[in-house]
Image (cartoon, rainbow, N blue to C red; front, top):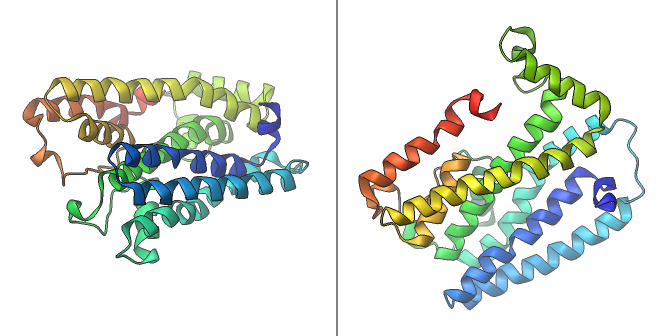
Length: 265
């Protein structure tokens, strides 16, 4: 863990992105979609080796300004990581351009929800799972970096709360944490703290949708899309969902975590 903390922020994110490719590869094995399985498994091997080489080359690097280095790493994550995510997606789809695949991954990772694949049947179930997973990871990244990087620096909207009367206690705690821990330690601390909450909320919504009658695979992607607010769906939207009204009502309840900053605090 100490060696990972000393690595540049972007290298850690790149390694996590490569590790995430195992999920659609495993799902493709279950679905007997061996072409998609090979593409994502080879992508995992390729980018894991690349991450290892970059990690070894930068392991002794000590930036003069750690906070600035992590801001640059965050910028690199939203510009470079979609290029990496698009490689197996492009190869698995086959009848598309790399530009479209890159745009799709940018849209998923930033949780904007725009897509160039309006026909849901054009993509295999494993590719839809990859889209939902990339969006889910993108929202988790935003959540962790907001509280561990932006809040202590009063950036990304936190400067409004810092100057207002509301939320002074939260801002004071953020400032106190900033004084006793460097940005790398804060990233690790808040990742360990917030990730189980994020995973648990997703799991609860997933199970709830399944209880409402939804298919487990579709319920999982809809749960990840709700918590990430990406709106990604493998069936073209909730109109075609088996859970119908009660599933939509349950999803609406979980949107409370996206609509109010109080739940974030």
